[in-house]
Length: 197
Image 1 (tube, rainbow, N blue to C red):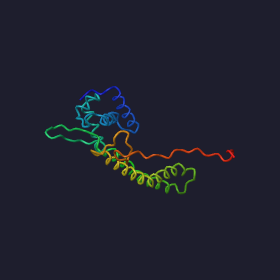
Image 2: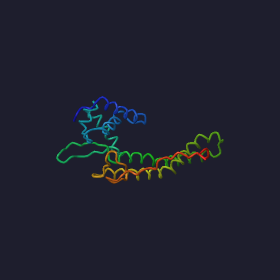
Image 3: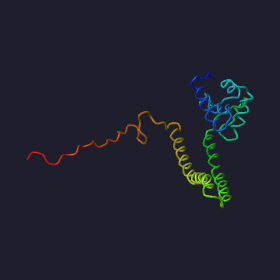
Image 4: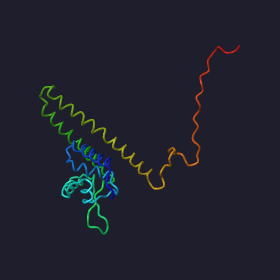
């Protein structure tokens, strides 16, 4: 395994800071960042510790945090005792799906809060009411958005199957050797009047 470049390590740190702002420990975010670009995709705890320059115990804590969400998964190679970690093929989708599933739960909580404040002033209910409307909107709209993503992901997977790679410069849906469709040339508008008599 080659040593990561400064640019790669900067990317790893950017990912870590992004997830730290969401409440995740910095080292867990760095593990995600490196597993997104590592070569090979599967990395042992020892390799992660070496690249990220942290202790094995820190890597162990990070992977225990990341694997339950499905984003990172542990795999074993035949004949080897150590475990390797990688970003799961559908890990990112599963992580986001888990977050989206929580919108309905929080919408129900805000609904309960509005009932508690039923006799309160409109001003007091406004803050909670705005949050409630946001989560009600998300709960209604996210299923359709998620269905569109799954259809898009299925199309991408189909296009990336061996033997289906699109050649550079070739437009989608055009067979090899097929001439490009000729677009009608723009004809300038003919002026009325003023011609030879």
